[in-house]
Length: 139
Image (cartoon, rainbow, N blue to C red; front, side, top):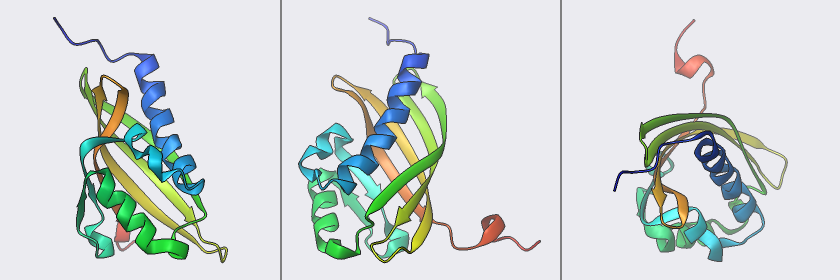
């Protein structure tokens, strides 16, 4: 049996997966993390001092530990999907987080997304802050 080809419908499903992340976190529906992540997901937030979280349970624990410091709004944009195989893609996107105090921050998400029997899921995510213009390079 050969793998299914990566289709325009797959591209749409991957894009919706990234959008769903923001809705689930913002709505506090953290019991649904299995709709976003593989059971063995690696969620790398090393730059934020949290290291690499392994599995949805560690992601849940980290989100709960942040409590009121979590953004009230997660917004994803500038999604670029690059197929690696028919069942794996690399996705680079921008995330904007809006805090309860109105502050805003920007990150880049670098994801590996895989096809599973339940649909597309994030298998690896690295979150990188954007703190300097032009990628931190001098003009």
